[in-house]
Image (cartoon, rainbow, N blue to C red; front, side, top):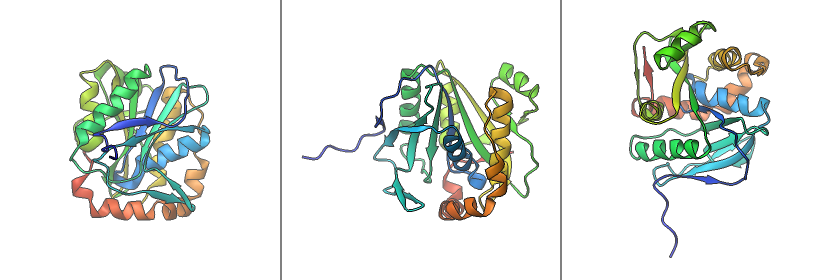
Length: 241
């Protein structure tokens, strides 16, 4: 008898020694800022795919990119084991969300991670080249020194909100970096703004030139996902300022 799909399980496909990594995560939202930014980070840091999320709550969808088949919910690590990335390239419904959140944070705890950073977009009419943050008070003040502004108030839902809520009751620091982004199309400029904020705060050196210069290619690659986000916008994660 075939084994039933799990509620949620981070299924490791490559062994990698991780050293209390900081985790960057991106999910489908306004401008597809999260997936675009995380995909760029993965490429520039030459990260390896180490795991995928298996769950009966994921829609039965897969992703093709430049003709290559890949799982839509993936986990990556850099060669040093100090940075991990989580990217989800499908829209997620509310059903089963708590199981997905718990699975992610259980895995993070098992790897000794102390910090998870969610990159996301705020639906807006235009990008203002600014990065914003929501985090616990002490961290907000530190980020202000790096030209990352505090969000005065707002509402985060979906898997980003679930992760941030759960971080408040676990021994892991959760924060989100946000940029104003297009409501209806891929916004690589907003993704670049968030990566540049990461560079300032985490002393990374991730070049964003490609994001600025190859907007048409990026828009083409993410066009189908962008359309699905528009169709299901009311059912998935969002941030309202």
